[in-house]
Image 1 (tube, rainbow, N blue to C red):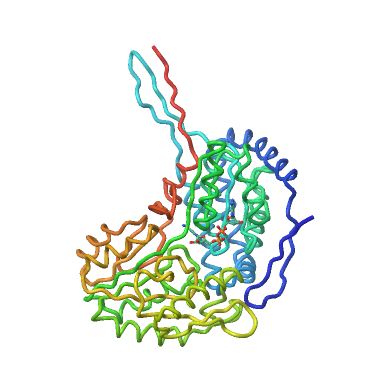
Image 2 (cartoon, rainbow, N blue to C red; image 1 turned 135 degrees about the horizontal axis):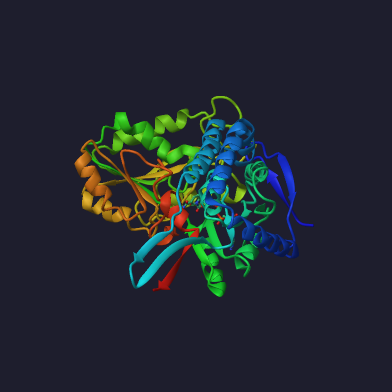
Length: 453
Ligand code: NAD
């Protein structure tokens, strides 16, 4: 039987091996899920809500153990893992309090017309490795509240904390309602191509998203795709760098830059560039980098070798084309997939590092002199997940934020996610929304009933 090997990216130790189901076993999982769905969809909403709360409480009570497991397989510092486990519990609580109501469109002498919201059936939930537990919550909580069943395919690089969460949840859920499908891209592809899957919710790369989009067409499956971002941060000449610097820096380097809505390009007004670059260099060089389980660690490794090589290649390309490596620029020698926090200047929008998503601890800093030019360059990559404006003039900041072509725009922050607000990408960053009411609606389809009087 094939298996996946889970490696600690900080120590390169083998943490676990997990057997991967054969396709015939996936078929059985899907048919068992369909049976569980038939019962769950008729379970009263109030009961489903109570179960979601119980799940949140159980996850909270195991927070420390789950966080350690997440850090071991993903690499992020422990305090970031604790925050992520807190996020899944809070998303389950959010959805537990969200109503699903029938609407009466017309009720008169001639007709009664009602619209109800119904679940789809068996959903395939596909997760990446960078924020696996948090994203499990974004997908699974609304999926279950809506009355669907789910098969969860965690990433082959970080499945353990997700699978542990599912095991904890199973104490509160009917058998087979939520099942874990450990495996790689092949198992993911098999799952989403299966005619028994009614709805797909995927988070990951554009390449995989495109493949899913093509496959989903064969069975007319409904899809939500949350894909990569290449978020710009535009720093206006009046920005108080001293005050804002910490937020700008961590907007780039939180989770070693492996966040879909991390700042991936900075456009700074040319007058502020020297100060900003100096501060970036000083802070990047002072970071405590290492195994996220050790106290005081501020930045962990890149999660896997494939991603480490991708980051290295983008930096190498920039170096070869004549960009200035202000600090960092190389893999850290020794054990683990560590890359130096890297700041790069003297490059333009044609560089691969600026056009593509690096998803690592590397930030290109570009300059501008005209704000209209900066806004147009910021929106010029084909991505549209997030973007931010940094200024002391709130009115101008809000106006400029509305000109960014993306699903979430921030003023004087980046990466803050409010669970009750919709989240998702414009353009090639996504299809559909997660979180908020919109995230629940992705898992519901309407049924209109006409009564002729
Ligand atoms: P990935 O696309 O390689 O893998 C993501 C998941 O999809 C994995 O579970 C993988 O096994 C599965 N998969 C791969 N190919 C598939 C296919 N053809 N059919 C079905 N499943 C398939 O992505 P990754 O490297 O794990 O994650 C990094 C990417 O995720 C980055 O681009 C990042 O920006 C993106 N991301 C986006 C968001 C968002 O909300 N927009 C959030 C986090 C991460």
